[in-house]
Image (cartoon, rainbow over all chains, first blue to last red; front, side, top):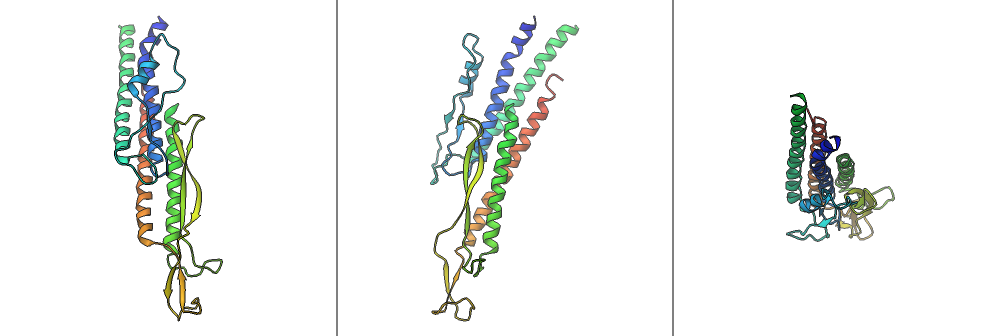
Length: 116
Length: 135
């Protein structure tokens, strides 16, 4: 049954881990907004989460990084677009909070089942 | 945990931007310094930012100031025979600081600094909220 509880929370845990990794990537993009030649990176969240929660395959070592295609290129080769990065950062923050809330609710559900 | 690395990344950016702000302050303060410590007119300085990966893979990267370089553009020459540093033709070499460019540089550095502080605060709030998981 411990395995069952663990399995129940596995999805949200994987989602949270990936959300915080993406938060780190986006903060690195924002931090390097003025670095010449820096290329903004991101991950395909849905595909990476699907791979991370795939029961058959082994856990992937590191999520695959993709380079962002800027809508306007800059002279110094930097591909960070601050407005887009900040929007993604805010979006990721809310989704990170949502994942934490879902996890809390799952825990509460199980506590209710135990406590009756 | 990944979210703690956000602090490392953002603080590196904050440090880099504040160094850039320092250099801008030095340039603006010396915009009219005809004589530097070496007897020559002051030269504008610029910081060079560099991305440094936080891990062995090329994932999230911090920022560091790789170098502070001197602007090699020619000095401003002003005809002022009364100036004590004027040459035989009455010309004085003044710093190659463009005050307008430096002001723009200052605004850009200040904005980037603020953005990174916000990023840090967001990460802090997320971490504090993650402490309440299950409550």
